[in-house]
Length: 112
View 1: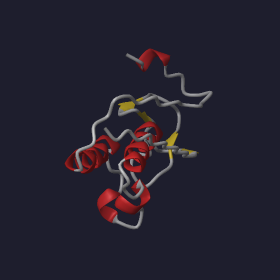
View 2: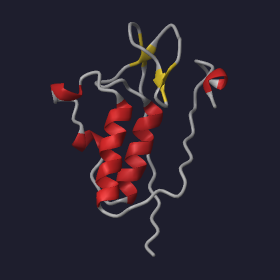
View 3: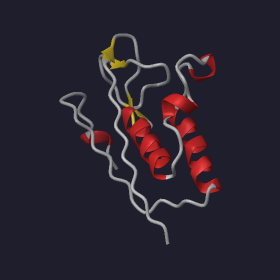
View 4: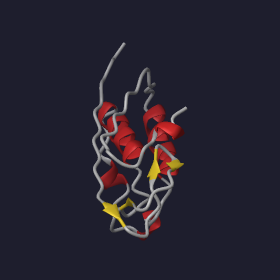
């Protein structure tokens, strides 16, 4: 059995006029995250961890910000594509732990 561990990190600045999407959930907040897609840092970190563990290139390679097809893309849709790549290679996911470092917005009401 081949066991691999991937690590993903993602950082986006806040920006006026953007939605704040974290973990696929839109969080009401005065600002959102700046990015070419929906800038969901939690999903982006998970995607890079999966890609790293499965020996694939990172999300910047797969979904470049120079490609208009990914403008404002739903990161959960991109995650599905990443997951399909990994499972096609025979990989499974046993555990994922994602950390969010943020003073705002408060996410506790949205965690299930």
